[in-house]
Length: 329
Image (cartoon, rainbow, N blue to C red; front, top):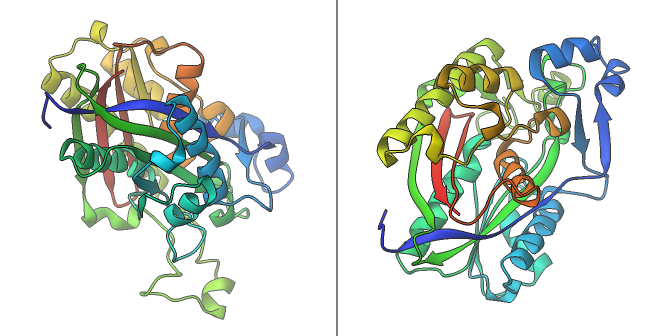
């Protein structure tokens, strides 16, 4: 990354549906309990999209708020990236629907699929576009309607996920702020750890795949726990070593909200003070690619980030994929 020209976060925004699905509500659907869910995940409730809400409508709301925060009209945006695993359609891309909804006719559009790591992957892509001079004002959005691909007969997965969207408006900065380091990784040999088996070209939708409930999220929970914990620690240590940062230099760590127990175990091993880590999974659950930008926007609105602060964002998900970004606000 060119350190004289950096891509900076000029504005943030998020959107969460009004409907709350509590653990008590889930007790009426599957054999589970509030105590069981909280003890294993830290989740107490999650947001669920209304029938007339989709990934694109939530993404558009978050995008509009990010543009307003950056004092940029949507008509000035020249690239829209949407990270999602729950697009409105197989095609057209969700980003094109967002372009139409917010009024950004100049923007090129494409979606990016890297599961829960999608927002970090999209930020890195946007930064490269900006630093290269190809684009000026880029909307990066993570948005998911996971409630529509969750099997509410499977207590091991239906308790985990929620809906929502988060966005940032990125543009060039020459003041020293912006992305100062990023790392993207993948291990395709572990593709089967988290997946939706049917609906693609390998196993097209059929009466049998629907009957066997193959269009819902499937997770190898223990493998995910081990992977996420070690990856969290590795990403933080790599970022600190590469950027020569101490714990005192870091204002906040914003991790993907995968599981509160994973986050707590990792920050304890890193000796990272809990107040320096944004944790909101108790209220929103795992929102996949939306979790990092939602947490970022929330932290800014709560006054936990100031100009000049350094933060580390990180995520890991299906693929397997993982990545981090070090940003100076």
